Amino acid sequence: MDAKVRADFRPLTRRLDDLARSQVPFATARALTDMAQAAAVANRRALPSVFDRPTPFTRNSIAATPAKKSNLVARVFVKDRQAEYLQLQETGGTRKPEPSKQGGTGKGRALIMPKAIARNAFGNIPRRGLAALQRRKDVFVGKTASGAGGFFRRLASGALQPLALFIGQARYKPRFGFRDRAIKVAQATMTPAFRQALAKAMATARR
Image (cartoon, rainbow, N blue to C red; front, top):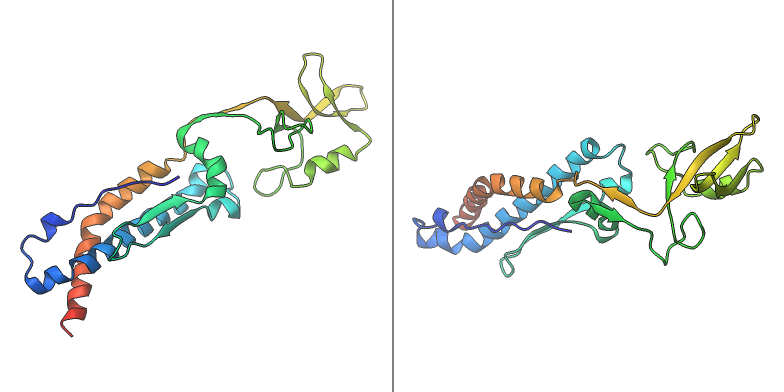
């Protein structure tokens, strides 16, 4: 998952002398890199305001690769593993369980929706949280009279308390804003980044 911005620096190079023109490839690569890095920083800073207590794994999801004189392309992107779950936060859509992964039914046919279950500091079910539930004598996997499956605890009154429910799918609305934020920051950074990079290149070339 990445964002694409085309940068046209030609209007900034029309009146340059020969020495300055010779530094344009270097300045372009530096400016593109600065644009990508600025977009990455902006998206990292936005994560805590977009998501409730993002985990360190999620906070470390955004990266940038630099441009080179031989390849004038810089990239800001969400790493592949994190993009598996952040993509739907960006575009919206429906998430369904993957057949190859273990779900609450043990057959990869359900997603887990926590209800009255202990969560970690980031609001998620701990890695061994469901296994711990299964070892408790007052907890069982079953269904309610309405057909809702999940982990339940039988209270002293005889009532059932849902701890975590099995759901067939989860719907997401777009809320990440990764691409829009990256494009906005990159476009705002474009001109000052190129001018600064060219000035540095010229200062070096004249030594």
